Length: 573
Image 1 (cartoon, rainbow, N blue to C red):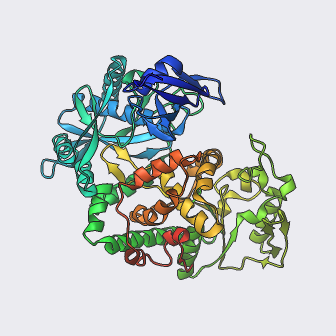
Image 2 (cartoon, rainbow, N blue to C red; image 1 turned 120 degrees about the vertical axis):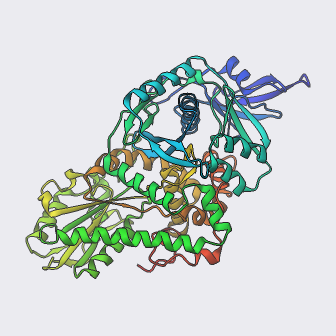
Image 3 (cartoon, one colour; image 1 turned 90 degrees about the vertical axis):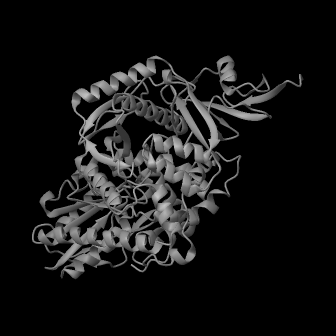
C-alpha cells in the first residue's frame, strides 16, 4: 500500500476504502456515500456528519489511522443535533446583522423547537438586558436573512485557539455566559467556529455548510419566537407548531427564577459550587419545591368537596413517585387524608398485553390497562363503596388480589400516578369534574450559555441511568439503548395531554446535574467503545465535562425527602 494512503472501513457499505493521508471524511463521502437511506421511510438524506469509531466527527475530520466510519444524516439523533446546532448559528448571524445592538438568547426547549428571545445589551455588566418584543414583520426579516445565508452555502469552520483569546471574542460578542463557562472550566484550549467571519461556539460538531439547512421555520411565541427544525418522520417538513401555553409558562417562570438568583448558566452554577455555595443552592432549590408542592395542595384543598381523585402523570424519571408522596404530605398538613396507589396495578395480564410496531410487549400502550376495572372501581369509590385494589405481579405477569381493601371516607383523597393519568380516555366512564390532574416533569431552563440550552431529555436520561443501576440492576448501556423507545412512548402517550393538567409541577433542581455527574460519570466510562451505546455515552460524558461535580459532603446536604433522593438513594418518603 502507498505510504501516503490509509484504509478506512465504511460501515455504510461494509467495505474498506483507500484514501490519502490528510484527506477529510468529506472527500470519502463525496466518492462513496453522498447520501444515506432512512430505513423506516426510505427517504434519501444528505450525509451531514460521521461516527468515527463510534465518536461523532464533522466531515472536515482528517483520519490518520485505520478507522471504522459510519456516515449519518438527519435521521440519526447525532445528525439532528448537528443540524439544529448549525441552524442556531445561522439564526445567530441573522440576528447579529439585523440587530447589531442586541443579543440572541436561546432560552429553553418547547414541544416544537427552541424558544428564543432577543435582548438589549446591558451596558452595566455586558449581559442580558431588557427583552426586545419581536414583531411579526421582524420575524419575517429574520427568516429572510437566514434563507439568504443558507442560499449562499457558506462553510462552517472550526478553529482551535487559546481559551483567553476565545473569552475575549465572546466578551466582544456580548456573550458573558460563554466567557464565564470557559473561565469556570479552566482549560487552555477550546474550539471556536466561524460562519461568514463571525465567531461562536455551539458545543458540538456542525454540518459542512449552510446549504444543507433546507428545512426550518420561525413562529412568534410570547415576547420571542420558536425556532423549528424538520420533523423526525418527514425531514422535508417543518415540525408543526404546538402551542402548549402551560408548559411554556412553566419553563419561562423557571428561567426567570434562575436569572433572579443569579444562576442562569452552567458557568455561574460552576462558580457557585467552586466558591463553596453548593449547600446554599441546594437549600434554595428545595425551598422552591416545597412552596410549589404546597401551592398544588392548596388547589386540591380548595376543590376538596368535588375533586376526590388526583391523577399525576409525567415522562420517565420526572419524579412522579416522589411528587405524589410530597403532594400527599402537603395535603395531610391541610387536614386531608390522601391514599396513594399506582396505576400499574391495573395492567392486564401479560398474555393480553398489546404488541408494539417491533412485535414487543407494549406496556406503555393505553390498551395495556384494564380500563373497565379501573373505571368501575373509581366510580364505586366515588359512591362511597369499598373495593379491593388489585396488585400486579410483574414476575408472573398476572394481576392478583391480596386483600387490599379501600373506601374513601369524608376527608379521604385518592392519589394515583402513571403515564396515562392525563389522557381522558383512561377515565372516560368517570365524571371528569371529580378528577384533579397534575403534570410533573423536569423542565430545566438552565443553559450552557446564551445560545445552547440543556436538554430536558438528557437530564431525565441521567436520572434514570443512575436509578436503574442502583435499584434495578440495569447497566447504563441498556438504559441508553432503551431510551429511544421510552421517548417514542412519551411522545405518543404523554406529551399530547400535558395541557390537560390542572396544575404543573417542575421537578427540575438547579443542583441536580452536579449531583448526577458524581454518580453517572463512572457508569458511562464503563461502556465499551464497541458498544452501540458508546456514541451516546461519549456525548453525555462530553456534556458532563462542562459541569463541576458536587462532593460527597455536599451531596449529604440533599434532604431525604428530595426528588433527587429517588434517583441517588437515601429517600425517607
